[in-house]
Length: 346
Image (cartoon, rainbow, N blue to C red; front, side, top):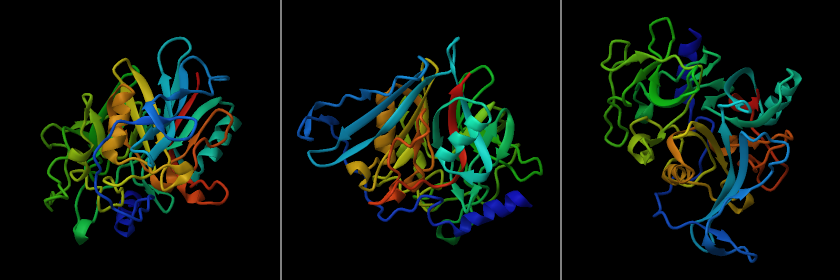
């Protein structure tokens, strides 16, 4: 079965698509500050509202620089998107059978006659195959990885996903696609009984009759993990090990390039990409720092997506805004990804 084969690829995975050189510990959060003319911190951080020309009023794009101390920072970009009202933009989660760079996806959307404003990478993948849930226009385009292999054990990870329903409302939940032939995603009230930190794992796949399980049918959805923000609270570290992501290479406790999607209390979408590994002088975020950043922007629910060299945001001119970490000191290098977050004109 194709999906079983896809899941089995996970055993070869050292880092999903996100190789990390170091697994550092979580550092104490410090007040973020912005640089003055000398490039050093001077006062509280303020994000720069730029690149507004050519965007509708429903799409606001910002660059940011958050300082951890006098020498270390995280920088990147985020978009705040209003999906309601007459001038609303369209938020989509897309899967591509032939993986493309975010710039390539932008060009394909233009070829289709659409007007793209924002394109970023989305879920985890390996060897061009998606390992994360993707639902587009109500159709399941790819399913969540059914198995993981921490410490050589076969386990069944129940991971976070972010979805938009037909009425425009947003939901975050934990999903698994039971191996019942239907390959449909089911929502669960938690990551269930997995916990890498204690070496405790489920011995059987979660089924459709599991307490609290329900068929999940959003219009658009993307999976990743871990859950970052739940009911306005930072839960990143709480669910990181329970979603069995440490062995996969998400490197949640060290600062890395990252991508995330979130929703605000008033129904707007936040899409954030940060640089790391020294690109643009940025160290990146830990997953906890990323959650705090999103909360500071008004997020009440948020999910981490694929990161590392995959993290990239393309703006309305079709050019990548950040500097993906695979670029090193050379030309900008973007990874080809099978799933993407897309914001287009209605």
